Image 1: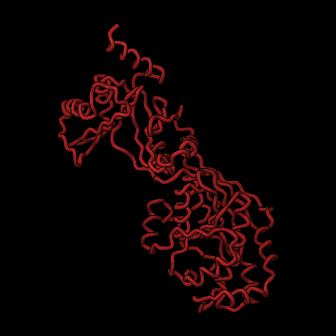
Image 2: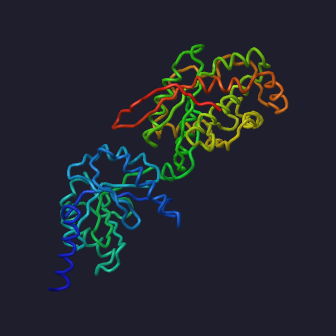
Length: 424
């Protein structure tokens, strides 16, 4: 038996073991995860778990690592659209593509690419990008690109454009098989959710806090969401928005816990007992205490807010300092240096903007003073708060909190509710 024949038989046996001579898959590339040195297996394992959960029910038969990439092997007729939508929200994925595994022999590779070329859509120009993770093949990456490019050009009549092609054929040669795919879909990047410590997000119904939540998800955190409302003093529009925003966030992190906390009674006590200019800062100090206690139930190690420096009166340096004064955990403010337009643009990209701009009644608008303090000093705010039974009010907020569990399935969310029984 010649060496060439032996190689062909080995490739055929490998492809047969994977289900066919040209098996469909999704080729997932990561970047930051690959830079983690000795900790890389942990991050890759977390990313694989998240991909498995995100693509459940979408025709993925197996997930495996393959030399700098992750492969999602597919059933022959797996629908691409739901797969694409779900993988596009998995943090840690930098790009991905629907692809195929073909024999490493050039003739088989060319046949495979030409057979699937209609999936690339219409194109007037194209390029071929080939690289080899397996260097023992007789052809170099450039030779593969030239020969495959000639075949594609002959079959399609399209011109070659290496700088700005309408369509790109990517080839990645591995020891067992060659992968090919057309173009790439952009992923969200970052680190896989669950690779960093959990956090608690103070979720308003506005534009900023959902964007802040997704930014910490991108850094590997899993988020518990806490929304404060003033129902029945104000209407319940903000609660409905919080549920919808939590559903969007759940598309990025999976199962999500949302707490709905009535703040109206606490606000009334503040209005009756404390100077008017301090009201908003005092509201927020209680939010921090209650959110930290609720999040700790689920392992929360830090608090996250959508604060942007100087955007509103409560977000001056002095007032942020006065609010953080009561924090027992690290406070993260991912948007602190962004302006409103930058935050709105990001909200549009992640899918929360249209929900956030719907009118509602924010709890901080209840009993808001005409002239709120913008330069709150710690001595003054502590003295103002000293007349309140802080511990009792915090316990009240925790006891009245409503837990909403959101699980993402297909394109619908499943919501379960129960009263919180947490105490501190």
